[in-house]
Length: 278
Image (cartoon, rainbow, N blue to C red; front, side, top):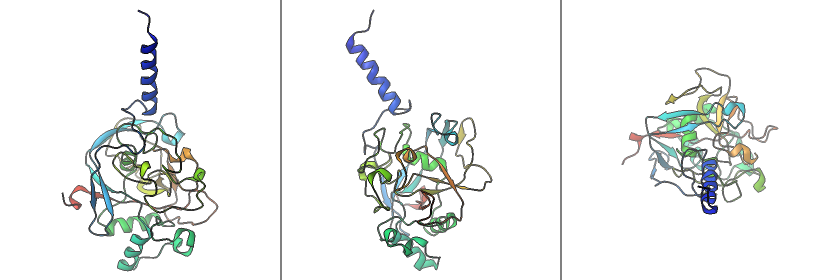
């Protein structure tokens, strides 16, 4: 039996949906997410969202070499992840409480507002804050899962190309970071904001090639010279906002206003399930 026009249309629609999700599940409209669980970290008052244990495909075989090979990942433990990047206001409370060194961004008025994400922090600074707040930095696998969920989203919000309502990035003519949470339509499946654009975010892993084959709770290479930062930046192009895009930076690098695009790193911690009351 020859296919009818309606059958062909349905087939094409199905193929389009499959492409939009990377073949891993249904496509979501921008800002559409599973049920979002939001709580507050009692240490610093930051909102956190719940990412349950689950499986997904990490990486992208159609991307640059460092995103390959695409591989199955299973995370056996759920975790709370900060809904927003850590702001200057919250980081200031940490500095005042611990005597930790202030970040270099506070010397530049374009990046120093209280509701902007803190930038110009080294990897060790981010680790110190996360520990003070009762958590740690996310592994790269946890970060990507929190950004794209289990349905293979190209961007945290789905397949739609970035615009100024979805992310803070080069083509929206941003000259600096914007206040955290400025793009609620760009939420990830679990409700995390700014996981594409605004600032790159430190992860716990060393930067290196992916292992081949399925992985369970991966923590990255055992050694390395660079640390992973994820999420793209206010001064980067849309390609670097994809949920699979990766970057590696010197762990103690904290340049602000330097020559390298994307050099201003921030971060968001994760907390274990037991850190937050039900």
